Length: 232
Image 1 (cartoon, rainbow, N blue to C red):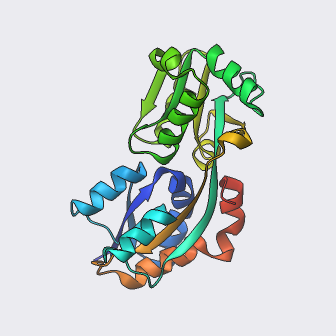
Image 2 (spheres, rainbow, N blue to C red):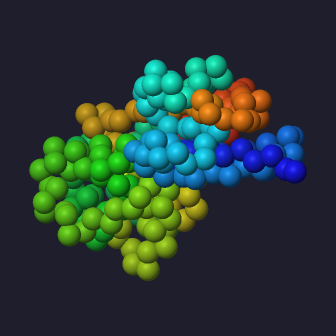
């Protein structure tokens, strides 16, 4: 019987996991079953008892769940730092978002704003606060297009039938999504840099496979892939 490794994974690492999935299966003979979503949703799934051998979320949450005994410290590894950026549909003009005024103008000119869940997604929560700091949250609210995870938001931006949309999420979710262009990081005063990590679940019966997959994700052989996808 083929072994299955179950993952609960933040959307920021979705592209990396998918890029390494076939290699892992070829090397181990194991199948990978991954659920992707907002960090908060992944925590809820773990606490609800959803099948999980490896969890990939923010390093802060990983360490908290290790302290609670829900994840194992042995095998834990950082994947890298991910910053939050701005995206537009491929083939459309790139606005100047290097400073606060440019970002504000670009957002006000957008027909729709695509971003992840402002309640449970790391980038979504942060971006909603950026809009408030810019003083345009209420003005923009009718144009919000929020989705459960940044990767979904970017796919929806890419598939939008009209131009003029803009998106904000983790740089990894932008760079791994076909049909959208990475414009740039949020201006320094609004920067969000989040370290992501992976750790085995305490209740896993696939400890060897879990550690092998984490080693592949975080190891030197995948460094170029991580960097190309937005991990620093």
